[in-house]
Image 1 (cartoon, rainbow, N blue to C red):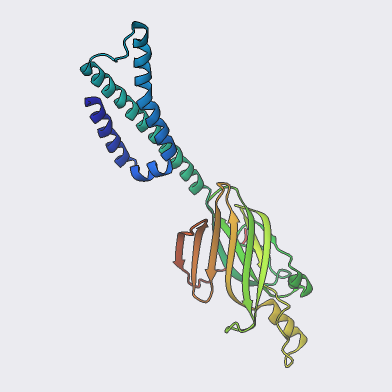
Image 2: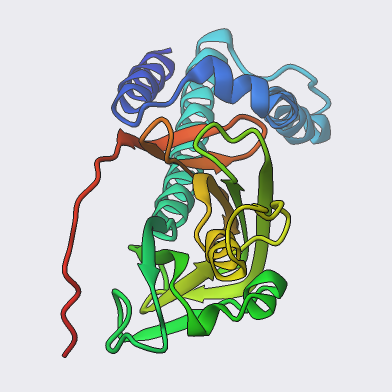
Amino acid sequence: MKDIKIGCFYFRQISRKMGINLKEWIQSNWKKVIGILVIAVATPNIIGGLLNIPGGNLTIGDENAWVSFYGSYTGGIIGGIVALIIASTQLINERKKNKESQRSFLSAAKVDMNLSETKNVGRKKKGRIVLTEAYERLIGTEFETTYYSIIRYDGPDIIMNCEFNIVVGDSSNFETTDTITVWVDFFEKDEEILIPLCSTKFKKDQQGTKEEQEDFRRTPFVKEIQALYETLGGEKMRFYQSEIESERGHYVVGDKEITILRHDIQYTKFAQRGE
């Protein structure tokens, strides 16, 4: 019986140190627990019976010897369960750390520029411009256009299956809006993605010139951006930034959305300097 008490004592101590909730662990592994208990109880009785059958005696020794053996045996079983829980918990913790190390965070900033007149464009040396239908129709490369400059921080070399949804409007009240949807198969860590915010949905101002009307469609009002992407750790993340509420957040998407990082944003003016 002393072995049982020692086993239970160490089990409680290790569980506390490793943050193991015994009740939750048993509930999630109840089939294994029942199987172990059945085997643990049946095994010594079967062995004892087999050892005494040849002598024609079906008893299993005197009571004191049996209690001593059963106590030692049960203590060993408890020790084995403790080792199993520790190994399982360590494996779970390693998987959790690996997933967290694969998380990547985004930065989105509005940029107004004329690509035909601007040199050393961008926040990183390597970059891609998404050629949307509206951007090509409005010849955005030849005129001043509003872009979302998106770059990455932390995480692996790439993230995958990235979908960006950007809501723009024809006025600061956003009575008429358009959603610009862009998908890229991968997003490298050392690159910048420029998404033009052009929209042909908005009605032309009949009082303005054609040039003024086209300029307006290249530089609409921006409400928000949302991005969904997958990490190499198998997680799906969501990035959200509101230009109206001036806030930004990163979330892990699953059965229950988990907030990883959320904060307010402020306008900061920079002068881009090329190398």
